[in-house]
Length: 87
Image (tube, rainbow, N blue to C red; front, top):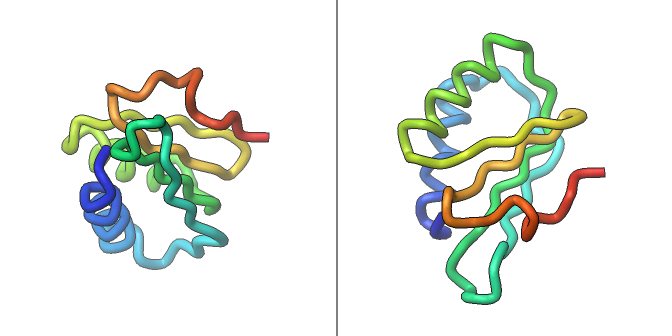
């Protein structure tokens, strides 16, 4: 996903679930091409909020991975093996 698209997705998430506290946000390059970014959000979400975020992610044709309070949002062209594993 491009940088502008990541920012747009983040804004939509904030508008969709405005009462959720976000501990940290990271936007990092996922490939050597310097074009594909991964959006990492550290936040506590309930199942309903996760469903709302999933609908935004799908609308943009992106993928999402959830683990231990982190959400990774990335483009379908980015192999998961190239994305830093959540610890």
